[in-house]
Length: 579
Image (cartoon, rainbow, N blue to C red; front, side, top):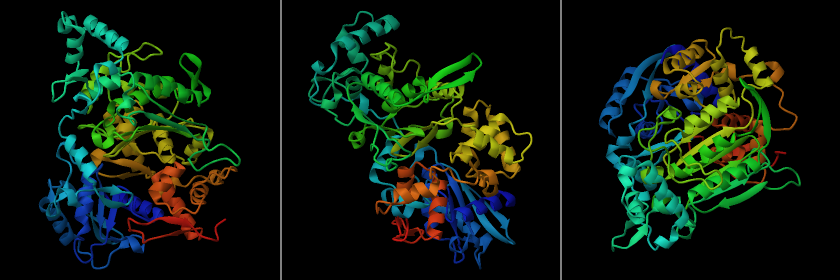
């Protein structure tokens, strides 16, 4: 990281008033802080991050007196190699900053096959960390379990379900499946009975006592009512009238729709998609073929998102009490499922043709040959095409690309509702005064302005080749309007502080009172004490927008923090004088 790049990054930290999720700052005047090892573990177990040593957060990120850059660099290199297991391979350099020297380390994400990375002296279960907001949080036993299963191939969908019998499978759907595979693969299934074919497809298997029972994958694909055995292996759907669960109009309903969908996966997909589309409106757009009317979220996009969530979720015993959760707000659709990305797939890989890795191979195989009740199409017609299909349909409809958020225990897709390049955004882009920007750079800047993460993968999903994606993002950094955060392979890009400030014509908040400060203040109006992460969930705002709103509200005396800035117990509450 060069000096100018570090300068813009520190300006961003000063604006936020705190560390970022993937940027940690420590003074290091008295030597290498012990907590650095926790941060190295956390960055390695997440998406990587940047560690800056030699600045004091409590003094507006000014250079720390008495900091010895060369000594700290050597101590940090030794800690990476000797104190972490597996060793952390970080890019460590000394960088000049404000007439002094600081140490900057770019820490990459560890290969999933070797996670978790932990502090060797504490052991795996006490020394493994992840990032929680702007601090480090110890991994739970469940999270470590999921990381272990990610090293191999889980077999939860292959195991027979205790107490289930052949009578719990839908006989018609079983017959249709058998007929389809006999036609498609006659060499593999010719001359076999229906039971033999179902066994070969792992729809049924013998339990430890030799009793033939449906497997979990078979029950979820062909079962009459799988929820008899697993009540929470379903989908819940809630449609809210505002931008958060707490944003309720005066005398208005708490929610517009609230239901759950049971049955086998094919029925759940059809019923869920229908419910979502019933709660959205139709808009028009113009493409190469003329004017077209589509739902706010194209039906094909919604279907792929729901099917992917049910196919790729974690079905281990730890997660069987958690459904796939779908939430519709006025400005976005959120699809969340238990279990993060599986295997070596990262968020940046999503959208690439042929990119796939599933923790549920039996289920994935079956859903290619099991039909949707309404259309007769297969649930997963072409494996590995789901997310590319979503991206293609969204680009065609002129909609923003979805956000993908993968954590160890949870994967979430967020689809914004509004057009990306609206009149206000176009005016903001013009106000930047930047000549020669490409259309994809405009889209990337609009994504950043909306508070969404932009990476090399984002640019590829906009239709660019990898080398062109890197070139266009580097150009934005070189122009000084964007800041790169994180190790190169896992870098993300944010608007530079001066770029994030809108032109004077755009500074006024909408008359609706929907500024970030208003939303945060409203979320605290019931007297709750909420963490920053709680406020993100309640308001639907991005990490950075919540941080800025909290800083403004605290400075104006409208809210009070309940603990010091670095405490994991820090919450916020409204002051008695706040309106």
